[in-house]
Amino acid sequence: MRQVYRLVFPFCLSVTAFLPMPARAAELSPAEQKMAQYIDANLADSNLLLEKLVNINSGTFNLDGVRKVSGVLRPEFEALGFKVRWIPMDEAHRAGHLVAELSGTHGKRVLLIGHMDTVFEPSSPFQKFERKGDTALGPGSQDMKGGLVVILYSLRALQAAGALDGSITVFLTGDEEHPGDPVSVARRDLVAAAKQNDIALEYEAGARSTATIARRSSSLWTLRTTGVSAHSSGIFTDNVGSGAIYELARILSAFHDQLREPDLTYSVGVALGGTAVTFDAKEGTGTASGKQNIVPGTAVASGDIRTIDDGQLRRTREKMRQIVAKHLPGTGGEITFEDLYPSMPATPGNQRVLDQLNSVNRDLSLPTMEPLPPGRRGAGDLSFAGPYLDALSGMGALGRGAHAEGETIDLKSQAMQMKRSALLIYRLTR
Image (cartoon, rainbow, N blue to C red; front, side, top):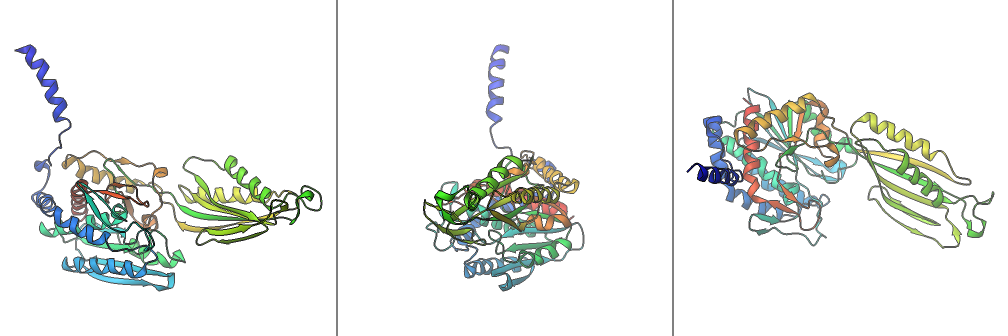
């Protein structure tokens, strides 16, 4: 018999190791148990709301579509007792932002951040929600209409448990994918909301075992070079020099070799050169024309920079200016910069919020979440709030292929994300 037990027992361990672990009810308060039960019981309804939201095209430049999404969400928040307002963003050439506020008397003041727009404009062929088992395809399904559903059903679960009594602000931007211009106007109200709260949670995307406590900045650079336009037979002479494209190539090659640092990336997204060049820096598009036997008189390149903190950004820009200033014969050049998203360095406060989330994970028998390396996460609205409070991102929907046709959401993970969110908000607002 002992030999039999030695054979069977390890096998039993290997099987149960892969079975889903139930929530450890002994670690959850009665209110928290009610939240988890509400989420499980209403998952089908949450998927119906997700389908409704995904089927509304809300590309950033489809202002009416963004407003339609806000029109679906507004009564949902009002039914929960939130005071809801719409902030128009005509001055930044965008639809606007939806803000829902609930006044509480205890605990931390919590700011929930998300966005209503997607990268898929009405011209995209990818327009509709399609369910395939536990996965659904749809434009913005993961980024971030699934996150909008997580926010709403987390709050509904709190209400069902009689625990929706904290100070909570939901701030949903209408232009996260392409911020309005100027950014100072487009994010003015988000910054003001951050200053009035203690902790921010962002729902743009989620993960099973990582969360974001640091995000890199995002800014643009545009380089323009000039040369003497002449017949190609005169290139490299004292009267003609090297031409605009060689100067552009020299500078880009030096960027490639001389700027590298940990956590820094810099990319060239567009390069054009010839006798005639047009370039729209805001759209990142342009045209160029010329001839093979003409020395080009103008060239332009543009790309982005992503840095872990402001010091790295300033240092990188200064190095770029110094490289540009060393011209080839007969050429000139200048570089300009545009700020988009600020950096959000890791802080002890951000880590403490992650520690609190991991306490929730432990009590739900979910994996411990480690800080995601900043280089693996793009810029986001949370960075505008980061300087004023403790912040965490990664509370949203799980899926694949964000920003690409065929984007998917993992529907079976939505309940997990809602429970994480509801319990974390509950504990923060006690």
